[in-house]
Image 1: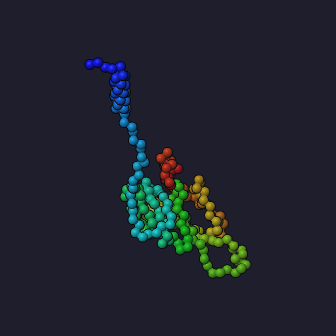
Image 2: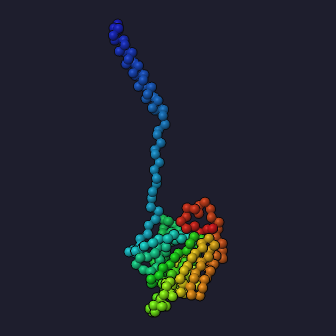
Image 3: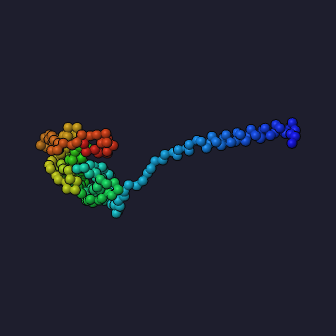
Length: 209
């Protein structure tokens, strides 16, 4: 077979093209597969039907190694308590715990404490203008409530005619001012709290010191 001079370059060009195609295919097969981009895994851990209960505020609390959600109800002067120790199985333990007085409110404990404070505005017969000027500051009845057991709150002390309340969370002190003078209340626990760890920082309300 005799090849013409014009045919030979065409054969060489096809041959080189085939070599390049085979080399590219081999290099592609040798590369490891591209890793898939990681995606955030989101799932529902648990769910609890409140059956028509209207809630206006929610607070997280830790008591005795258990975790609770306190739900301040909008339809009643009370808190509902949900045990969320197991997020996959939230349990409504009480619908009407820690009842708030009509027209009053309850402040839940600060971190590291189990003492709640209930405030009830005082109401009475209208005073004379002179007496009203002398008693210009509104007064409240203040109850100190032990929430060590959230399902069984216990009032430990009541103060009447209170005009001012200041909390010192660092020293676990409460300062109250009423018609009998200044009261300084200490509310340290009998059993000290465990020391906080790095895991405690992620808790909304850690039960540690």
